[in-house]
Image (cartoon, rainbow, N blue to C red; front, side, top):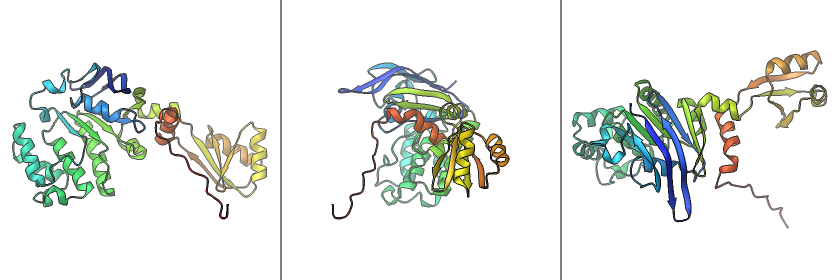
Length: 310
């Protein structure tokens, strides 16, 4: 089995504990989303798994072996950590040919992955002429070159156009469906919700959650009902009488932790005029922000606007 196993893994840079004794497993047959705020330790953890950094303590193995002990690693692990890693003076084809030669991968595989990622027609162009999205596709091609059972991608949607985002989403689902181990780091909650089966969430170098996607959402976010009415005073009165609080935003009222099948009959029975009434399911973004709000190292604030003449 080609699981990724992380046990008591720690990494300290000077006085910063980037990874703090974490434990998790990434299993085959599902897409595992790897989430966390900036500075949470995601990239460091991926580098430790791939042997690019050495841990201060703990272990990270792939199929029971450290990455540095794997013969012809591209045949076991395909990874994209930096879309700008390819030498800008090389053509895309030559970049992949060099990787193939070093891992004894047949040259026909180069042509196959270039076509798979949509770069077949521009394979002879130098990488320096590529857009960010094209470089991202080339990085994904390199990750898939050895047809590996384990795939690790850091922000694979970065720079991709809408067609490319749909393509990478479908590719991730296909890889998992083939029984591969797929670990994907991303800041795009909507995209992660579209492709992930399981989530590992880091915060300040620690594991905050390791659970199925839908379980995570259910544990950390509440559904709500959205209402629009021509009689806000009556709406508030009826809801308050039932011990329910509503919050107004841009002409609509939001009732957290409630569902349509309770609020609808309540308003109808009280004669509240309803112009809009809908359930809003809890989202991954809501759940993620609820969990990580105390563990975000970099949080922006909205400055107050200065008044003219003051």
